[in-house]
Image 1 (tube, rainbow, N blue to C red):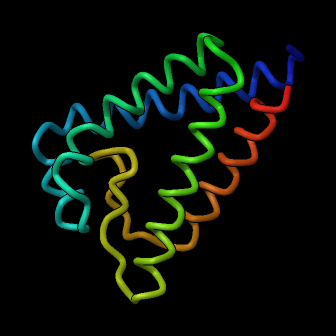
Image 2 (image 1 turned 45 degrees about the vertical axis):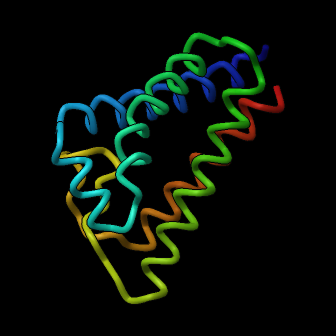
Amino acid sequence: MSTIATIARVVLGATFLVAAVAKSGQGRGWVQQASSMGAPRLVAKALPWIELVLGATLAAGVWPPWPAAIAIGLLTAFTVWIVAHLTAGRHPPCACFGAASTAPMSWRHAARNVALMSIGIVAALA
């Protein structure tokens, strides 16, 4: 694996790990916040664990390229979710990184996810 692909994999993995820890640290607050945005409670409860496992497998380089491909899929779903809120005129708090991200959703959040998807593509193709 090339150095660039390794850096991409580790950066993407660290991003998911930070998001998972931030959401978990928020406890029930995360589930309530995600539910208020229309996410099913089961999804809201499972997401930090999914992000934790995904981030760890990416950072550790386990089972390439599958974790990167799954990360791209998850980021795509998040981006669609963000765009749906924005086009409907809703700007709830992002909550992407738990209590650490309370800014209202904006196109900046969608652009950030597209950048992360690009990093995922580099990690998946290497």
